[in-house]
Image (cartoon, rainbow, N blue to C red; front, side, top):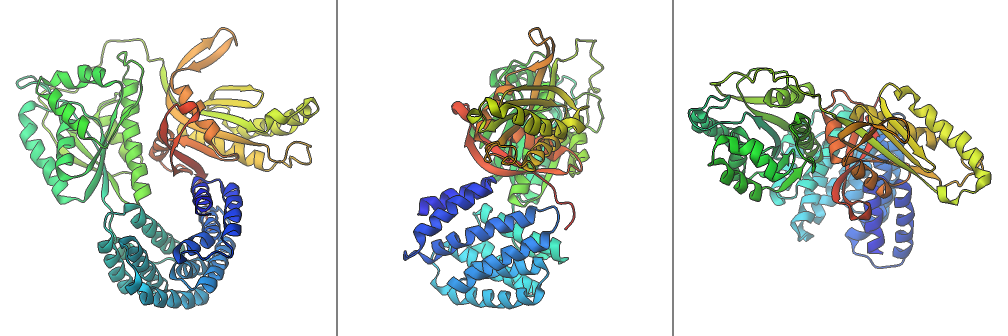
Length: 566
């Protein structure tokens, strides 16, 4: 039964709502009549209400009735088990549904239940959730000062559980946004470590002109140390070139922050192009940071070939990863740039990173350096890169193998025509399209365009009455997305433009793991989406999954529309 509950919880977190409900029904049936641990019993009974809450929070319209349905589900559990967690969730959901009177009554009850059970709790996690429950109840009751005090106690009880703190902060922020409450002080009482993306110039050996002169290293290192001393930084994302990158990475490690590295291509080639030019002292420092890093992402396992597209791609991956980590932590992300202030027109480099971060609405703290060499002059004309960073969508129709000849016309006239109409508004952005029976592939210029097209496809298919078309009623599209450099080619067999590249495989391997009706995307897709200003699609973290044929274990995100009104 416990395993079925955990399966249902995992499915709910992954966005496979209907599968989660089915698994939950089986778990609940098994639990009936058993003498369960009270916490497990409450978690099990509350999972259906949690699914309803998540659906309400993600709804684009008619949110209040959905919050009311979640509130009623939580209240039923609270009345059955008389436990604070279900009770406070019922209170919050009723407040979001617009029924303040019912919310206040339940919040009073939740606060009393939390206080009365405090002495019986053993683990730090249980004490944290109990105090967080009381703080949330006090917020619903309008006692913001008391809520801040209790939440600060919760943070002291279990300071290392960042996921629990993020969950609490998310609930409080939602309550504040929906009900017009000023919750900044409450959130400040449960702080999270900040996330930093760093960027900066490479250096050269002493005496050689550079935008980050070797003679400035000590001064810059001291300024970087002050930044880490003055801020609550827990995670840093960036590269590891000689100069500013390594100076920041070393300071981050000394401060105890997690170091997450993104390199554009293989370590050996990166050392040759981006570490060795600083002089022999830099490679040992590079290797020490590399070994101490919490994670290392190689953006492309293909050769560099002098193509700055890979440097730009790696920088954007690091920036997007920082932004998405901050969202998951309910924390703040900002950029640290060791920069001489000179704007350049290249697609890669410190200036491009600062510009990209600011375009996404981010804040940059600059540590100035005084260049002894000008920005690189325009390079001699070279063949343009054949690599282009684009979004890639791979789809597959579940149930297609059960179709018989008599189903072909209906599949083409109903399903494929609907799909064609859904992608028509994106014709100008689509670079390549292909289909092979149950398979679909689209290559689209941007992450935002790919995300909107993918959701439009799923919406169009969800509106089809498959039974009326005499097609399997469980037929649906699994759709996965990735953003990566691909190479434009002319396919001599198809006699038309196409794309090729190693990264197409990564997108194809994600598709079989995607629940029917959903869009799963890679961390790269999610990162590029986070960098698009004003994008109306968001990528929510699902977890780490092993993709088809054991290709890799990687972070996976689910796409959904951003809220557009209540």
